[in-house]
Image (cartoon, rainbow, N blue to C red; front, side):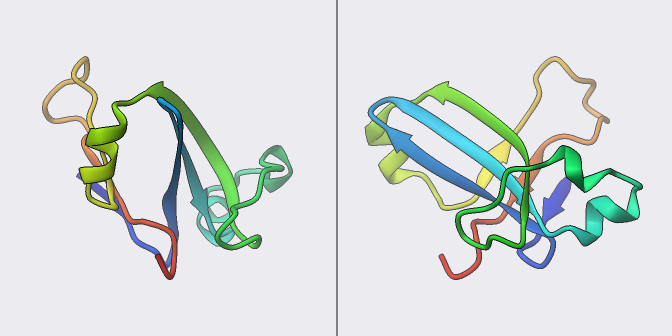
Length: 96
C-alpha cells in the first residue's frame, strides 16, 4: 500500500454534475528526488500553488455516494497482481 501524506502531496477532487475529477498534487521535492523534470508538470494545485499536478483522472460518479464518501481517495487496480503496489490511500489537501 502507498500512502501519500499531506507533507508530500494529496488528492484534490471536484464533482461537476456527475463528472468527478481527481487531481494528484505533490510538492516539488519528491518528484525532483527521482530526477523528474518539473517543467513537464505545468499545472498547479488549487490548494497550494507551490505544488505541481502530476496526475488527473476523470470519471462519472453518483452525487449521493460522493456526498457520503470520506475525504481521502482510495484507489485500487483490479487488473494488477495482489502483491503489486496497490491500493493507494491519498490524503485530502492541506487545511481541508
